[in-house]
Image 1 (cartoon, rainbow, N blue to C red):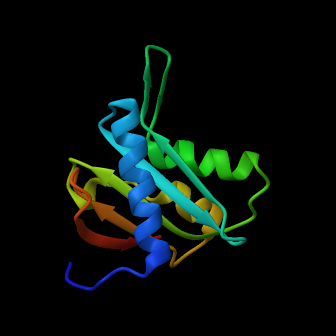
Image 2 (cartoon, helix red, strand yellow):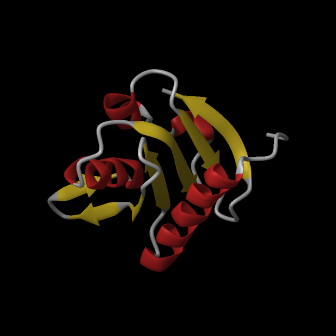
Image 3 (cartoon, rainbow, N blue to C red):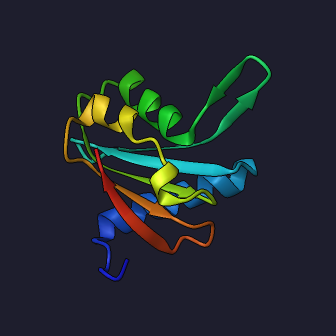
Length: 113
């Protein structure tokens, strides 16, 4: 992925990377709602509950009153085509960009809902 990110998109990528590092999780994510508010989260892995970081970030946005998404970012060791963006589409509809980056924060792909 060679295109430079918009500063606001770079911000959610940084938030996703920070959430991942803070929790010591395999994945981190951040979303930006239609009002420009951001929500960051890490994967949740408990015996009775497993959520991806993107699911948690979207749930945080919804529980805070967000009615849509402008963009999302996921930082993961997984391949970009393995990132499930359905939950971002549930809130944001079709066409929401989901920036996928490796653990070092380098963007590798943009997937759309």
